[in-house]
Amino acid sequence: MTPPVSQNIVWHEGVTQEQREELTGQRGVTIWFTGLSASGKSTLACALELELLQRKKRAFRLDGDNVRFGLNKDLGFSPKDREENIRRVGEVAKLVASSCTATLTAFISPYLADRALARKIHEESKIPFLEVFVDAPLEEVEKRDPKGLYAKARAGVIKEFTGISAPYEAPEKPELHIKTAESTIPEGVQIIVKYLEDNNFI
Image (cartoon, rainbow, N blue to C red; front, side, top):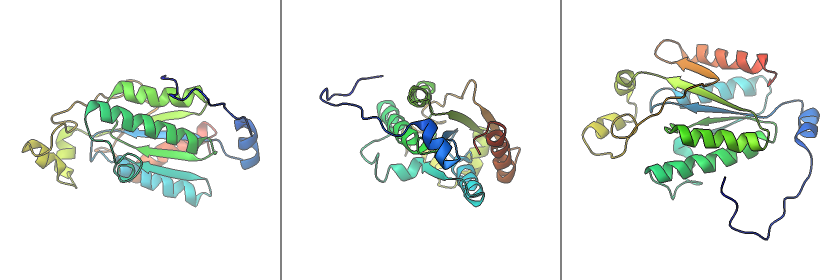
């Protein structure tokens, strides 16, 4: 990864990740939801966040649209801006997850390389990273189109729109693959919860 611009900085050690997990009783993890717009990423992430909180587990959601109101409001949707968008979110997700929180990120994140970078950011800090492919066919998400974005993209009003005028590179080996045209949101939540339980994250 690119080294920091400033050279006059020193990493300060503190409480270790192992100590933090032992004292809090929870392992940190980032659950990275990726898929086309309207595939169900945000809906699934919201439902999972609520389920975990109701179980008295720490959970926090980062949403693709929401971060563009603040952290990433200076970024557009060019490939370069998308890359920086995901890099920043990857770093923030890593920080939140390192606090022993289940961090849920709902981002289209269409490029394999960008998602690989987000995973690498976590791996370098030994923070678990789970990729969840929220999969729905293009014809299905176009039917849903809750924001009217696909219609605008088809009409040429929105440029560089994923799935229409910009590519979506599907995950090759996601930890979980959820097909939202074939299962309900509660069913999807339970699939993820079982994975988290089976792997001692909750």
